[in-house]
Image 1 (cartoon, one colour):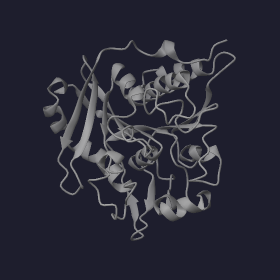
Image 2: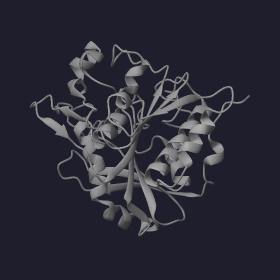
Image 3: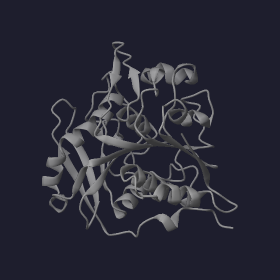
Length: 320
């Protein structure tokens, strides 16, 4: 029997409009914030997904130009997807100060980028004329992969202690109603590798106990990250286990850190290339956010049922 994916529960795709770059003024930032906007060509009262890229080794996938398999799919199925280029992107290497205390990952600025986007939705609508009057600003979600998952967790309520001054950092944005964490970092402390604790001290105090917003955590059971953690793949499930509900955990069988290839079409950095797995992630994340933003929509339950049907499931789901 073929692998099970929730294809039958997803709405029919529609043509997509993409517009980039849209420049948002950011006086306190090293450079203005550039974003890409992808939206269905038709429809009104469209929900919004803020998509945070990972750090990665690539030159352009970790920017507004990456994650097309996800952004294209979500936009074709009714979401407006907004993707920033964070200061951690290699595309901005010549524009940022390498001696900045937050370099090279810019953990605080990444979350602030998303808040800035929400603050400047009027500018985005004015710049993208096909978008004017079509956004539902009450229905906003955030999705992040890898380091972008850490960004998303902060926006959803996770906190940490600033390694520079010892203050608690709270970057939660109440306008964001739900999120998806894809291969996100887990807890700090003794779970970190020696290199991670030394080079990325902000990871050391990650606290998920305050991450109260609904979230889907996605982890691959072959995603072992020895450069970051002394734990196995389960480290990437920490945001589920250590945060209060409501939360769901999608564990993908045989998936590595790139989760089958979500960062780009035919991306060379993908070590576990698997189109069926990418399809499942596209559809399950879409279904999760549909149900979280529209509680009467049963897409999430239907997608979970389809995922686990048959003899060769791609993964399993648990919730609390």
